[in-house]
Image (cartoon, rainbow, N blue to C red; front, side, top):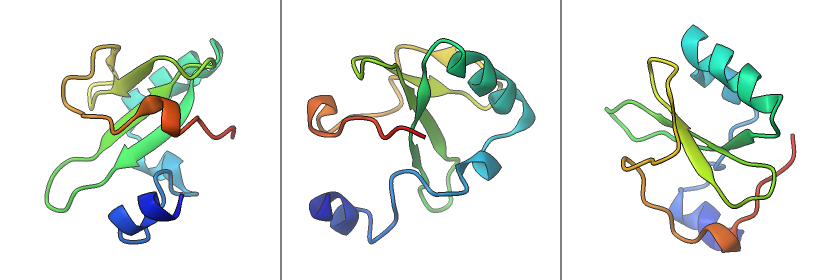
Length: 92
């Protein structure tokens, strides 16, 4: 985990106040997804660009992205992952 923190300049992958990064549409979608075992995985917060909200399924095998519109995408072409098997999801 130290390597991940260094790459993020000490920013955690998922801030403790992650709900404030979601707009109303994303919040509605996230609440619906939680019923099916999906959970928040990480939020990419680049400077001067919109952030990316990523969620992961309960088995840790699929990642999706919550678009600004609230649309849920299972084929997130907007993100590149460093290794899904190396970073299992944290339970909320």
